Length: 229
Image 1: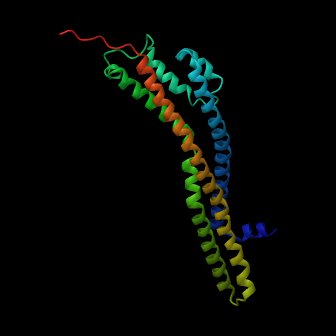
Image 2: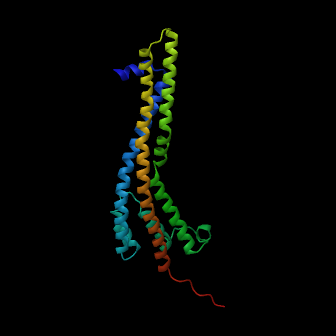
Image 3: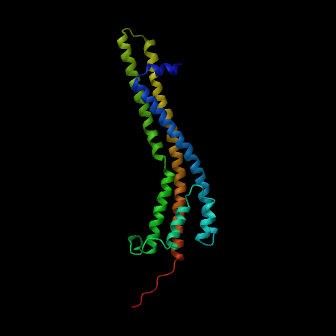
């Protein structure tokens, strides 16, 4: 009943602030649940995929081995990028284009970098939202509190006589908005920090695998023919 009374007594600004905090809370918890599942699976899948890759006899067999382990498609794009340079298909980019103008090492670095950026972008999705909610929700709640106090004092001034009971109730209800802003921000900040540490470990593993994969493909490539003077 108190919540309904607060909602009915509030004006459009107070209600809009409360709805904004509710939307921020729902969005952050959806992202937290999704990223918790994603990073949990990614941490195990990357380790299993890299172990299976190095047990395979060649790139084609490695691709088949890790396909069943890579549920979030984090390692397969790197292997596909390496295969596109090690075993270029017949319908690849023409040799006269800039994509084929550089050496094999340059081409491999470019395709691995693009694949790695795409994978890391998938892992980092939602971090900006958590950071935004964690940094802005307290101020949104504070705005609701300030506006609620102003609205309550203005109503009391119009009423004429003011007592401590008349002041304590509306001001206390307005302060709830500050608590609501903190309740929205704290889980977002904690999740952002925890996910940031997990992301750092997974990114380091993927970057190391990309470097090892590059060296493997370059070492396995045939040496260019010697130039005759």
